[in-house]
Length: 329
Image (tube, rainbow, N blue to C red; front, side, top):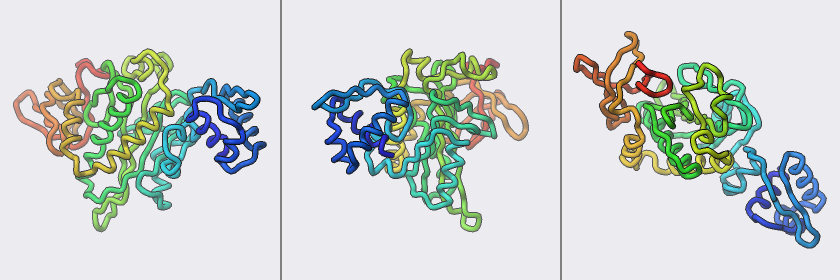
């Protein structure tokens, strides 16, 4: 959209830029530039204008839009980034695009979700204007067992992006929860499509949900005390578009690294783990079992030692860690 392109130019310039220069750069009329500026002002952008100087972006609302992202990502990268105002689920929308032939690296992100999903069918609270809800399409050629490590790789990439923008690094509760101050700040949902006859992975969708500027008191009653947000932890508002762009760049790097840099990501995942060495409660087909998490193994599975000394190896499942997210016993 024209207003997104105008916004990107104003943000990149960081000062006054003439309407003529914008018009020439975008190949549009001066009237179209003026209309775009008027539309941006109506959305809360404070844009000053001065004779013989042009326009200057004085203030931006903390929006998550294509125009905001264009200030941080190249035009070519933005060709496969779909930025929505609202959607039922970014994972669901991206799966539809995958079926329609979207390329690896396609991204869907939204300002809100009406049916955000977590693991095991849970709802992921996705309020408007405060969170980051993003999914990326991956097309690895590995067998399903190998691609299970992608959740761990994604967790490391999210931690990298958060550290880059916010200056704090979340811990990872095996296998997919992101933790700050013993409370959940985000999670990852990985879904894949496998060809039944060959077992070939057709595509993988990794979905990330982060509580960015949501205040703890605004969270649903059932998760208060168990969840937090980045803003609550660092004491300032986080620019969501900058964080989204950093996350996309980190995920792009992850795609380039897969699977040759497995050891590097394994070491990072182990360093970020807040599960190992802690008392845990594991949901199994036989019921809840207690033990101590001993190690993240080579394939990113979790080794848990039961009180009787026997071991169980988890490749997936539900693990609660004592002292985190409300689990006390």
